[in-house]
Length: 218
Ligand SMILES: *[C@@H]1O[C@H](CO)[C@@H](O)[C@H](O)[C@H]1NC(C)=O
Ligand SMILES: *[C@@H]1O[C@H](CO)[C@@H](O)[C@H](O)[C@H]1NC(C)=O
Image (cartoon, rainbow, N blue to C red; front, side):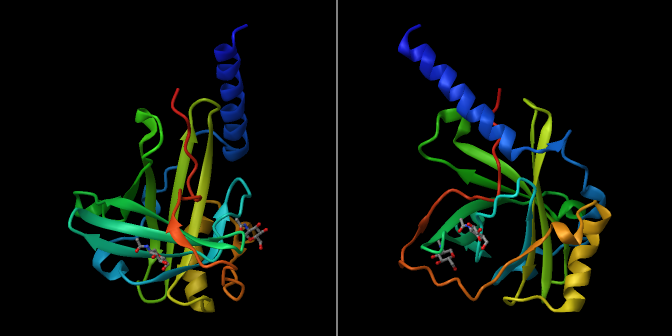
């Protein structure tokens, strides 16, 4: 067997294994469109949001001390999602918001990320970023899901966002309501702590987002 074939096989196994560990929930992404925030107003979503709770269906917790904020640039509206990696570094990922044309679909946002060094067909990746609930002032619940046709499984990430580091009880109840309806239990959510968020080294630069799982197209 020549070395290129071995490489292909190795690559296949590495990616396939990754897919197995990321995509753990059976079947396709559930349809959450019925649970979207009605009359969503993007203009009121500006300003800083802190991830006060999150749920990652593969159990990986790589998005600690995370905050996010919309940014307006000449080419469109972008979302900056930041995090602290392993307590060491600031990292942020900027994705372009794809805004639905129909007003009824306003909460049904998508985020498009560019990966400069990836092979051509993997260069731009689009992920749902659906707002399930928000009152703009205190809380927001955002949902994403990716499906891997290869193994017929999906991956879910949920942000419970707060305007402050912590979420008050009333807001928390309202934020978790749509999640309970789509079958995500309160006990699935992990609380984020912001008291250990000073990274050891001050370095702030762009990196891949760790809240989405890309199903390698086949
Ligand atoms: C994204 O947000 C983080 C945290 O607020 C900040 O440090 C970083 O500079 C921002 N990136 C851009 C491109 O604005
Ligand atoms: C995030 O925080 C959790 C719990 O404190 C920790 O186990 C995990 O390693 C952290 N992940 C990163 C990438 O910092």
